[in-house]
Image 1 (cartoon, rainbow, N blue to C red):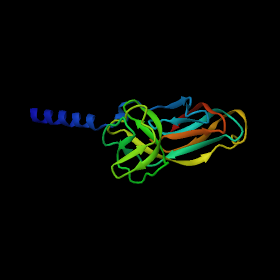
Image 2 (cartoon, rainbow, N blue to C red; image 1 turned 120 degrees about the vertical axis):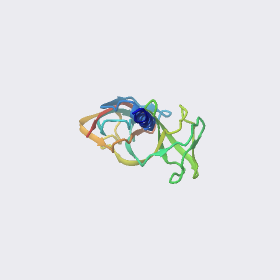
Image 3 (spheres, rainbow, N blue to C red; image 1 turned 135 degrees about the vertical axis):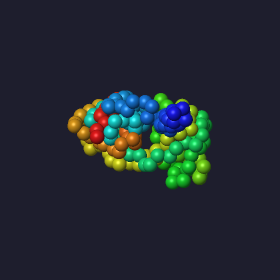
Image 4 (cartoon, rainbow, N blue to C red; image 1 turned 180 degrees about the vertical axis):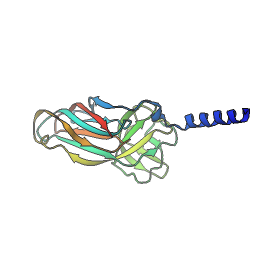
Length: 198
């Protein structure tokens, strides 16, 4: 009997250690936030991947100038960091990445996200143009982001643009969406919000 109890305890301990870091946080039901500026002509917001379903953007509010464009990026399959890194060299399988690819780094322990750009890549790492603001940890995730669409009505319109509907843009379960707003002299993502749907 004691042997069986020890075996069950060992199985339970293994199950706990095998749970990915993101699963230890409760999945989000909704998301909302403001953009992160990159200079004065580029601002972005990253829809979190850790949700109770597929992310669905239901509203956005941006301020830009004539010629501004709101672009939506969806994520590829995840690439896992093989070791911690606070430098521009990110240890992971870099095959399939190339210069100027846009990335999202998912810090799984805190469920936070960063936008990065590839400088170069090899079979064992990706080199980004700038170091992550927060050091990457082993088992954090990198996503290569690809343009999936632009928002109708935002381009070539100056001033504040607000959109709200039942669903404006959606993506896959457990993958982020990158919302990027670019202008010629100014661009700001004031807010993005939405829900996760099953």
